[in-house]
Image (tube, rainbow, N blue to C red; front, side, top):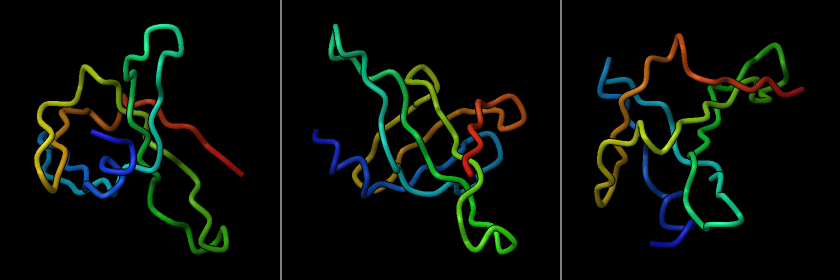
Length: 86
């Protein structure tokens, strides 16, 4: 599977059946070539001129299944790593 294939899949959280969005980027270990996490841009913010304020970094261990159209993850969003960007 290629990174471009991952970017076409929607990420669904099985904890609350919430749609998180589409994969925006991935995090790899350069030494081993292993996938460490997928990064999903958060919702847009109107007051920030439609700039995305957060992104969810979902560790590989939280990915439950990769299907033809979706990726199922098991993430507690309150404890998930969020990166804020300006």
